[in-house]
Each structure stands twice: as structure tokens, then as C-alpha cells.
Length: 343
Ligand SMILES: [Zn+2]
Image (cartoon, rainbow, N blue to C red; front, side, top):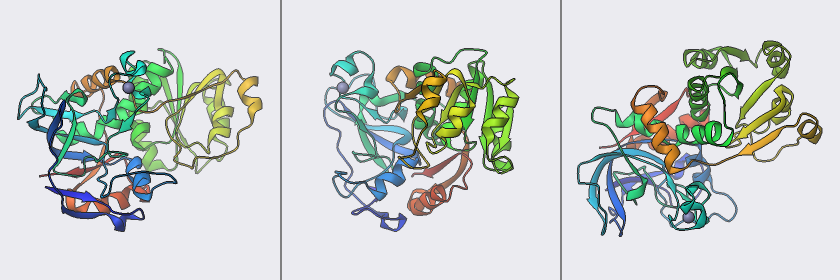
């Protein structure tokens, strides 16, 4: 098969488009012939590497993908060759206490497709049959791939972890990233009022199209927490979606008393200073999560397939141009998901 892979860590130039043996599904696994993959920031971090990272080289990145069942491993039932599927990238062992309790994203032997095991930048990938979800006839595999990781992550964080309720106010820090565009839509669907802080008018216009009620341009107002207070009748936001991290000081200021600060990542870097006085003084909760559960995946994908939630696609590249696609993601200019078209 054709795949995009790397033998060493570094910038986008380490990515090679080359031949690689088509994997064979082990017991309980399915071979998926991919039609589309979607990029995530995780792909960049995995390519760059981090201290202690252990991969089997060459590594194939990619967490998101959709396509068709191409072959079944031993003992797989309920799927047939040719079935259309979208992949849940969250690989739990299925048998530890967390998995058995339905918290498979807290599995003690947890893996993420494309991070520690070979992923979807390829014509074929093997995944456990339990990680497939049916893709309805006529639904664009590119849109399904675009939705997978980011909507799953945002749903788990906002709905499962934060318990977002109708009538609450949600502040999303960032207007155009995948998890942010998903969070805006999920918060609106849940009946919340949504405020968005963005870096420029174009990205904020996208947030507005997705239903955000109030748009705050941080290029016009550095201390945007002041505007959040004005827009919420000096109350602050009940829930703050902050996947930047370095913006926590302003998010703490912008939160209402008793507010929940949600984080699923740190695009601004992993380490930053916080002022603890805000946390106890304002009764704040900081809620972290990674990915979501199987039940979250089916719930959110059904909302995608019925059109109640809509993945935002920036652009598509053929698989062999994965290097250009990752460079676009690193530029930060994209508005929504970047897709790889396969086959
Ligand atoms: Zn487990």
C-alpha cells in the first residue's frame, strides 16, 4: 500500500510518501480501506517527538479516518467487507476496570491511533472492530474523518465532564481550531449562550456562522476578560473552553464564581504560571480530559450524520501531499479541518 511515514523525528520534511506492507488484521481487528483522513495537532507533536517517545519505525501518523471494511480478522462478527465506516481513534484494552465501566478513554493501557500505533495516513489501517462506527450511505467520508477526534473530544469535555446545562454561558478561547469549532456548535446545541475570543475578524466570522452569540477580537482588546464581564452583566462565563493553556490567567478572570475551566490540550505550550488565588477565591474547577468514551463517539457521530453538528473543513490534499497539509496546519492559517483524500 501507499503510506506517509517517517523514520526519525523532525520538521515536515521527515515525512515520506512511500510503499509499506499492507497490514493484516489480527484477531478482533478489521482492515479498513481508507477514503479520507483528517489532520490533528497531535500528528505534528508525534512527528516532532518528545523525550521518552517510543514508536515502532517507520511510524504512520493519523488518528482520524473513514472508508470501507476491506478484510476481517479472526472472530470478528457484525461487519462485512464493503461496509462503510468511520474510525474511533481511542484504543482501550476493553478489559480493565476503566474500560469495563465505560470509561475506555481512561484505560490503563490506553493508546491513540496514529500516536503510539500506526495510523490513517495510508491506504489501509487495522483497528479493533470495536472502534468502528457505521458511516451512512451518501455521507461524505471526508466530513466523517474531519468530525471524529475533535467532536468526540469536545463532546466528552463539555457534556460528559462539565455537565453543560441549557441557559449557561460558555466562553470558547479560540475561534477556528477543530475542537473550538466543535465546542461552539455543541454548546449552542446544548442551549448555552456562547462567547468566542478570536485572533482576527475572519476567524471570528467563522465562529459567528457556527452560532456564537458574542465575538471578541483579541487583536483589539488584549485583556479580553474585561469584555467577557461586560457581555455577561459582570457575572463571567459558567464554562470556559481553554485549550491554549497560556491564556489560563485571563480565563480565570473571565470565569463566573463556581465556573468550570475545561482543557483538552495546550496549543500555547505545556507549562505556564497560574495565580491560585483565582481558583479558590472564585470556587473554580479545572476539568481536564482526553478524547471520549465509545458511548460519546456514537452519540456525537449520530448528531453529525443527522446534520445537527457540522464539521468545518478548511481544505483537502491528496495523501501524497501530506507534508504540505501538515505545513498548513503548522502555519495556523487554516479555518477548520485539513483533510487527506486517499485512493
Ligand atoms: Zn482498558
